Image 1: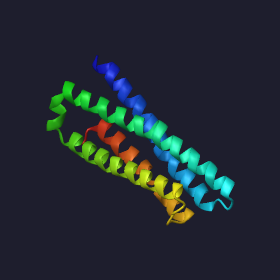
Image 2: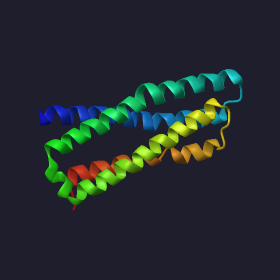
Image 3: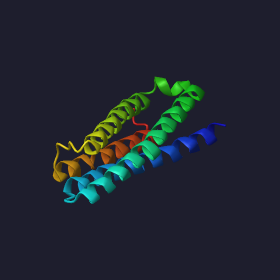
Amino acid sequence: MYLWIKAVHILFMVCWFAGLFYLPRLFVYHAEAADQQGRTRFQTMERRLYWGIMLPSMVLTVASGLWLLWLMPVWLQQGWMHAKLTLVVLLIIYHHVCGRYVRQFAAENNRHSSRFYRLFNEVPVLFLCAIVALVVVKPF
């Protein structure tokens, strides 16, 4: 059973990160959109990505991760898991910040430049690298 849950965890994590990589890129293009038709199209894409793919993927990633912790409680005594869980909490916060930006764009109340979103787009790469390194190397 453990390996199936681990596979589910990894699959939904990949889906979640795909959304975390793509949504801020949509923000870049949306911030640069000059016409109403383009802005409306980006609003639709952002809403569907966030609510239809990212949110369910996040929930299922967290749920399967908690299930794995329930099966392997010894991990909670290891430093690498503490670091990973800290990063996951920060990633969930990042996810919700993305949701705030989706709502701001939907209300046509964007407060940031495309350059800001280009930098914002790099944040999940850092999380992914750190989380994968912790899980594979288990340095603590």
